[in-house]
Image (cartoon, rainbow, N blue to C red; front, side, top):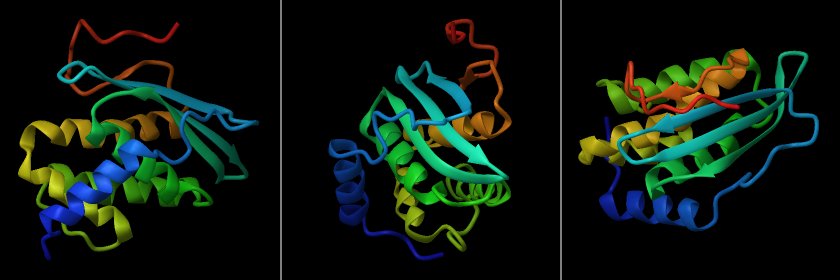
Length: 158
C-alpha cells in the first residue's frame, strides 16, 4: 500500500471543503434520502440520491461539519454519480476497509487520498460519516445514521 503524501491529502481535503461538489444539493427527482450525525464533531450530513433502474442518476448532499466530513461527502458524491447501486455498495466497502480497517487502496481511484485521514484517528469517523449515510440512502432508511452506537444525542429526522 502506497502512502499518500501529507501535503496532497491536506490540499485535496481543503479544496473539497472550500468548494464542495454537489453541495448544497437535493437533485430534482431525488427519491432516496438519509441523514447522518457524528456527535463527536457535530458533523451532520444529508445525502440525496436520484436512483432509477438501479443506477444513481444524481447525488447531492447538505449539511455542516468539519473539513474532513465535508470533503469526504464531496469526494463521495463525485465518485458515485452514474454508478449502479451495486457498484456504490462495493465502493463503500472498499473505502470503509481503507479507512477503518487495514484495507488497501485498490479499486478506490482518487478516493485513496482519504487514506491520509488514518494519520488522525479521531477524524476517521468524520471521513466515514458520509459513506455510512450513503449506505442508508441506498436503502432509503428513515433512521439517522450515527457514528456512535446507542448515542442518545443522535437526532432523528423530522
